[in-house]
Length: 177
Image 1 (cartoon, rainbow, N blue to C red):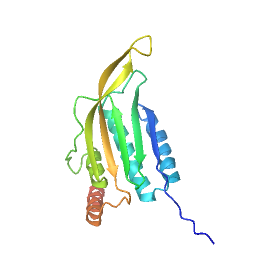
Image 2 (cartoon, rainbow, N blue to C red):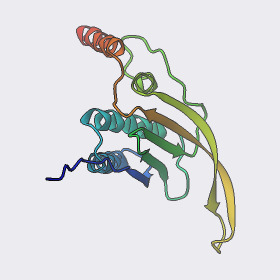
Image 3 (cartoon, rainbow, N blue to C red):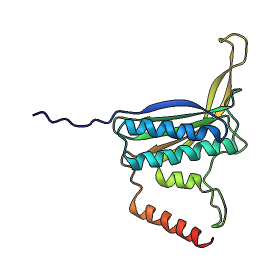
Image 4 (cartoon, rainbow, N blue to C red):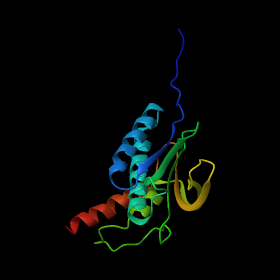
């Protein structure tokens, strides 16, 4: 009798997402399907989908699209060790993405702090990308964009202390309503 072991298959995808709320759901569904098919745990998939949603929402709210087709670029890559890198590239905006410290009653501003709590690492980098600006495909120009990237550990563990802290903060916010 042979012993058969399941093997995780790396999941990788890049997609153009409409610059607005319409594309967020489609991107989340595609990511979820890719990661589950690749053997990612439910915890990693749930965290990754939350992070992708937050990054795309921030790109829609605070940045310009990449090109005339009004899209941003979302990508994810799960390596053979199960570590997942998620990134969203947009056309940049008037400010650089930074975690905020909103008041307890503020309706927004917590997204990057939540990402920081879930991620092993994250950051922001400026990108130059080519845009077709002429009649021929060889006539291109470059534009500047911004990529926010996030790395999730393979096991999706954010640590008991941090999870307890987030739970307490959410409970406190619920008590105010």
